[in-house]
Image (cartoon, rainbow, N blue to C red):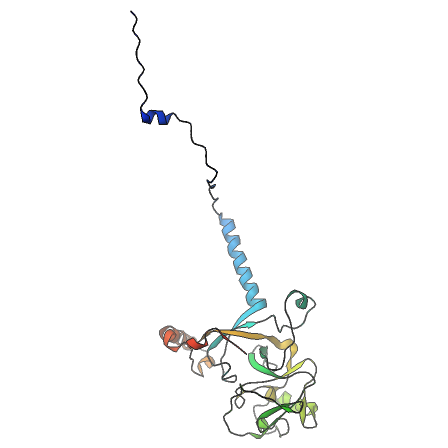
Length: 274
């Protein structure tokens, strides 16, 4: 008699091994392709170009090295300057981005008309057509005395400085030779008349500021921009920015590291300049 062999039942593991492979579900995410070296370099280049564009054309960092704008700006204030708002007019800038001419009372950064390459910050006092004069330190514009709550004064008296432009300039050494020669041509009826495309600028620390009284008008094309806000302020000796040697600069950086927390003016952080 023929015998039949019983087939052994597959175990659970064997049965599972015979199941067809599972299909990927709807929620399964495809594997993200890895970034190539060329793509990484391109990404870095985009970031650098964007940063360069912002620094060159829109924002620029400046440091205040002198006391001429106290107490609005202090020595050691680090601030960002908007290079767009007061930029010299072009055909496209007014259509694509906000632009306006400087206004009375604006704090602005500009290139010195007396020393090319030197950046200066002052306040707009006179615009084209304005008639300016000082009487005992007070500023009069178009016959009206200005209310200037931001002005700081020492209380002493210097005739040329405090009664500009109606005092002789010959004995005042801080006045540039060019301004000595040009000044009389702009005086009419005891007032300085601001010419076209020019700004008469003064510092808020009025008695120590070397400004338009000493080197003349600021041409519109010299305007760099308007300070926006202080992003950091560090108590710095008054002569620190005059030091030029490498050793002095290294010592200054070391002082910042050591005294960063104790000498940072935390209350001035993100202070809006106006």
